[in-house]
Length: 491
Image (cartoon, rainbow, N blue to C red; front, side, top):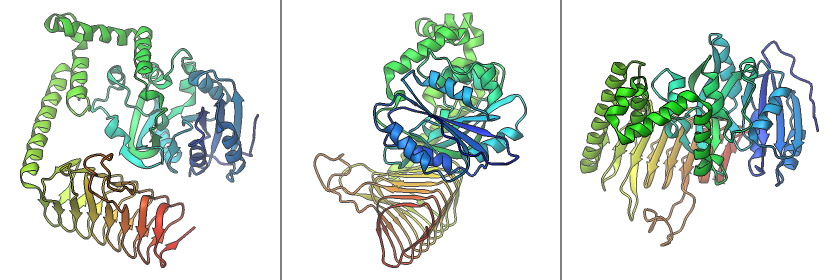
């Protein structure tokens, strides 16, 4: 079945957004709606259901019928042939200068297409694709982590060499030049994971660049193929059989285990890969800098020194707790670990990066208190483990940022929560011996938001939120909880 809607008349290059769908009935509506919400004016959507056995096809049809924006849409249903063959069929139908792929359980933030098109149009002709960062979400669309924290980006600029070690590039975060995919004859239908092989082939002749913005939501749930270890090992072996240089490195790793000195003497060209592998496994998974052995070794030493300093600081925090002074500025990633006394942060502190607050795990709750007028920068991710997170009055929570507490989360009056931010706390639970031990003896109330707060468009405030009087909620905000009588929702 093909459904067509008149395409948007614009001078902007056409982008083909391709969605393969298979047994994702709980999620496909949200995925499709995220495509319809794109701010980029000239897109077409190609959806192919690959023989779903649930209600996915019906939900796709109903959702497409509800689309209000003008775009060309093709929707096809077929017998199950696998993801690579499905993507190749969709690619043959695409007309756009650029191509994006989105799984039927993932979500695009509204600026996804616009930002990546802007970056790829600005890039040199040798750049065949650009990719962004994003967030990891769960079955209930709650943001749980930043994608690059779980799949860290290497420091090295040699994308192809780093791809021998691991694939950190998010398939749903890439925008390709269509001609580059056509020249590669698309995806290999003999493989179960399509993107790693494609990127290895693509980077033989082309470049891939990254933009740091967080523009997608990658959903993790029980049926993700990437959670199947056997399939992952099968795919890795298949890639080694297909790519000679990858097979050579795999053999080198086996030699290293048997006789390290002899392996290094026989394979000097593989030493930089060994350093990349060591740095990923031992040191935050961030790879090494530079293409020469000397540059790689120097960066490795710097990473070791940084890890040692971080471990020392963590030990001091455990002994004495921590108090950040007033009007401090905290740059980069911050991990604070407190003792039985609580973590107290002064007024007017500016957080320019991610922060993780770790409190003792056991009976009773600790607290992390962030003082008045503090600023949490755009895109930052705050996670409070085993305790309550309190954000003082008149704070600013930046665009695309995430506040998450495994206990309660309280936000003071007159706080501004910017667009597309996520605010999450533990679900309502009662005391039970069957709960995790750090929850036992506690009763959580979820999220409490003070009076006269402003929650901007597209934000998500989840898990038992209680909104104070005078709070204003912008359009397209998801709020699960109770609203005070004088709170106001703008549709």
